[in-house]
Length: 375
Image 1 (cartoon, helix red, strand yellow):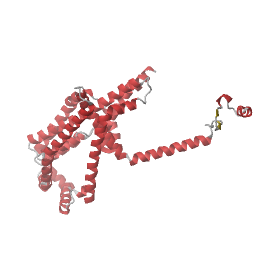
Image 2 (image 1 turned 180 degrees about the vertical axis):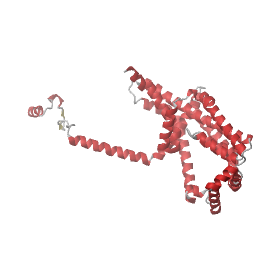
Image 3 (image 1 turned 135 degrees about the vertical axis):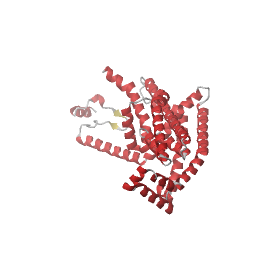
Image 4 (image 1 turned 60 degrees about the horizontal axis):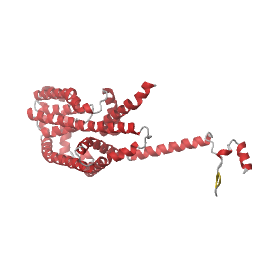
């Protein structure tokens, strides 16, 4: 034993760090972490693990998108659940009540809206040739058609779709594509519904688990910031849906007021496009004006004026009042977040990027900026 200690002392290992283990011999000298082979092996292993994780995330990207959607829906419904809990209801009962009410509203909305939308969509397909002919009655549009032939191209393409019976199947990649699209959509909707239910029920317990990862001395502050993010993001999601619903109601009333066709279909389109940041109302106004233009240029101009006026009212009156408890972020951050989210995850990424950016800003305001200000 003394000889071993003497040898270890010569190679630079302190005898106090040498421990004898009963039955397994003595621990050797620690590895030299400065050796080039050791460093190269760790670097190569880290790179391989990172590549494997990136490929795994890429292959499961659709699943992560569904999880993120369900999480944000759960955050949007969580304020309602907490309001019911304040009335002495248990969380399971409150979640069940909110889910049943949400499913009932969706079912009622579907039963009321889908039939007229389907019939009006069928009427739109049948009357498309007449609508194209009515566009030619406008001198300016007709001159543009003479110069560039865009109406003739639309008409020939539409007739080709109708004659081949591919107006629906062609949009989804054939008959098998329609089946795959329907099954995929139904499976995705069911997955989101189930995940939203689980997130709603287990949100407090899941957050407590994540909060325990923080040191005990900082756990109370981390919990407060986390709860604030969940509360405000939930308010943001719910407020955004409410604003889109108000825009849809406005377009429905506008279509009925100036006697535009396909009022229910237009309202449904606006309900979805109004959720798209930055360009949502631009797309909605374009669709409404194009439909109004098939009736008369005067109606198109009136629809454009009224829609523009509503957007200004929404931006300066409706949105500030509804969003006053949500996360407010600068306009530049909204644009950058929407662009990055759209490039990464498409439309869903563009919608979810803004509340994520707002949550990051809240963390920076509460954690990062105080440190830099006191530095």
